[in-house]
Image (cartoon, rainbow, N blue to C red):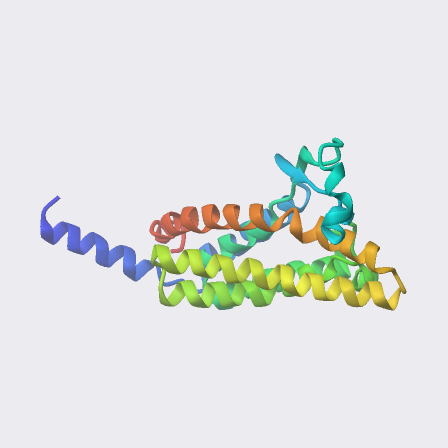
Amino acid sequence: MNKRTKAHWSELIEKNSKIKFSLGLLALMCFSLLLIVVSVFTQIPMPNLSIPVEYILHPVTYFSNFSSGRIGLVDYQYIPQVPVLFFPATVLGPVYSTLTVLIYIILGLTVYPVFALGGGLSYFLQYGFGYILSYPFAVFIVAQSLKKDISNFNIIKSAFFGVILIHFTGCIYLMVIALIKHENIDFILDLIFAQSVTKIFYDYIFSLAVIFASKLFKKYIWLING
């Protein structure tokens, strides 16, 4: 490939990588929405270190029980919804990716039970709804960041802040709901451990993988965005 052809090809990809509203864009939004829904009901078996919460709260008291068999690797069913969110964030840009996630949330609250535990307006009282509530904000921030700079370093940084935002918001929300329901501190810590501590590492690693894969996909998006 000579320099002129290479320059023309690069210019064509760059030109068509700028998403315009079209049937191709609508198809990508629908595909992204489908991926998000499917990811909710997808479980990937992964190893996970099991540490009872009381060991963390009272490390000295329970140190003597370290070899009691309650600490060790266990099978963990990982749900990859958080990483999947960053596919539209990378490919669709801040506006359309956020709109896609908002459609998902509206569908779950009003039309169809696309959340992990069902749907409907009563889902506001579910402990895990704070994670879902943070999705549009995390997706917008990550998409905006990647739109300006899609270098490897910025991908690593953006994925980190996106995942942290989701888990921080989710933890705050579940603590509020738990306090409203007068749950005790041990119950709250168990929830946080189950919802975030066991997931956040996998969320970040898989999010990086999704964004890097989406970065490659975006180069050829013009083939379907006519």
